[in-house]
Length: 294
Image (cartoon, rainbow, N blue to C red; front, side, top):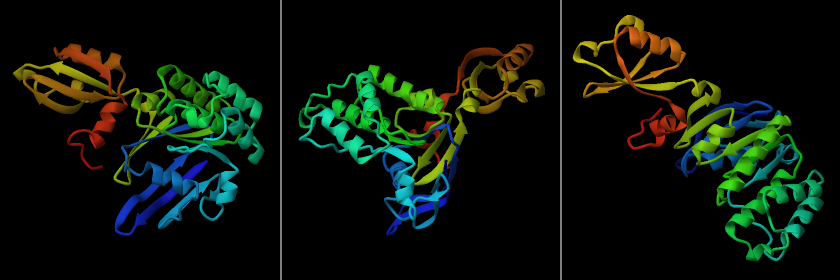
């Protein structure tokens, strides 16, 4: 559904996106992670055809995102990170306006989404809180029935209950065969709804992983005597060393826990802690304190 080939965007001497190559399959939820300035918004704007790439290509449903941007827009619904709405309208008028300018925006569906998000449509936009305006923008976006959803920080300023409902609707969109590009700063949301995730750093794609494979990675902490600091071959085959300090060793494994724990028991090693590696550990390799380059 989405393909980029060495996609690059420069502004003078500044490179906002640098040779980004990725593919998003139809019917999957693809997460974009990275702090402000990492290149997420630039990538999204290039996909929407709002900017011409310096080099490389971006395609949506086989259409060039810049040259065929009007046809690309007919394939998608987009929630910007800083959605602006008509302050002199109330919520229902805003939804009616979008249903009139986009034939694929279903007003009845919009009203159903608004009800699920507990949105008061009688309130004037100018008097809405930030969270209410976010819910209204989400309602207008989710009411469009197209195969691609691009959501830039969709749960910003929402309370936990509404966040959960939004994530549920993202999963419902996937079940209906729609593709979702989901940009967020919230790691737990990416873990909950995304099939694959990409991490951007300083305009470069530094990490890409299927979430199912990531969930099979475990961090194992062992208490090791001086004699056991060098693992025996039958144990070492399962473990990727991450460092040993004060007699405690840290390891990663992608093998089944039963095989690993059996080998550790045979080797006489004491398991202190076992936990899924999780997305946070990966993210902090690139954006945590002292995170390195890819």
